[in-house]
Length: 289
Length: 289
Image (tube, rainbow over all chains, first blue to last red):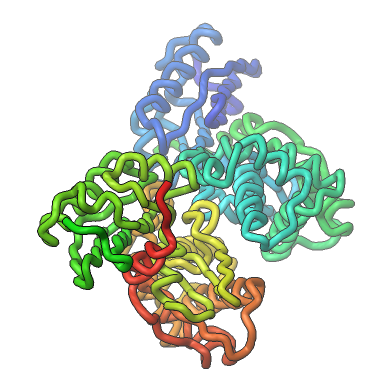
């Protein structure tokens, strides 16, 4: 193979459910998808998925894996906790020009393209970011036990907590709390469920909470409004200014729009591209190590 | 053995760390202690501990285990989630007159004796109760994931959360947050710790948080004052009235006294007795099933 074109790049967006790969080579883009990868919970599986995806990319582009090794690559990966973990993963890949980090900056880069603005990354987990004059800052993304404010898991756990507080008489029950209590069976069963539940198990209640909030259910509204206020507080803390674009990404983020303060709600925008596009964009800034 | 005296009773106070047994027989009280018992996490071990303790009580009193079977017994046990679970345990004990329930009422009965008042049951977990005109009501005791507001585990988890929020720039760091961050090593290590931590692991930070709050550390003060406000809110919700006694029990409860509103702080009392005394008191109200 001849020298790499300057625009040759590899981007990978690795999440718990899916791992998306893209290769731009001599002006052509190749895309493929593999299974989930979370570096915190399954390092070996993550490495295997990444190596497998890279091999398949090379095959699809009709080159050898060695031909990919000098192409700059950016990998945004769920569960990468710090730079050391990123470097550990990078060292096990057949790439010489590779940056491995968590998936937040990749998501922001995709959502904002080259413009300034804020990003609400809210699905099962959550983070909030802002790019101003090209400088990025991110809040959150720490996981449910200590963070993930306003996430689907946070809302779901909040609902179960509220059902127990309602059993204690701290809040009147509502249709939603009574339905979910009846479905799970008892306050004891709720406590047992919560003791075993993964974030995704809590997050499964989020769509119903949003729907009930729209329908006026007071407990659902209290939960959603509290989360929306925490989102607004974090946006202001990051320096959000009136008129500045706010881009929701992740399954739950768009649902918060009607619950945000009007001056924020009217600046909700749409993503410029996907997280995989973001990874390709960031690959252009990777240099050989 | 002759007929049981009317005052013969068995009381058991079973917690995660220790299980305390008492038998009152013919005017003499026999006490002993065995290892921890938590019915939620180890049902078989709990049954074994209870049976073993009862055998030893009989032996110590110089009677056979059959002689104990008609003596009324009250067992307050950590991890008993509902009446069904209590009945399941009761059925496996060599007692015919036995009530098995969670440990909150036992603790209240010991702390208040026969008087009215409020109880702050705050250690690794938490509950708040009130007895007014003999009627008892309890809030909390649901465990850390969904409740245990103001508990040691809640405070410790709150501290770790605050360290991450401080890393995000939401709060200025303080001596305490910087020390604990340095000890654990990194924000990534805090997230890993939290993902594995049991309530007792979080609760280990509570004494330092209380101490730092007294020393004026702003993050520690914010955590302790927030918890104290939630305690006060729950006391008011239970109907606490000015002048009414508030009895702190559990390792952490007394530490909150100086952070409560003055009208509450000046009514802090001391426990009338232990939870084991409470179990003996409640045994008097048990009838054969």
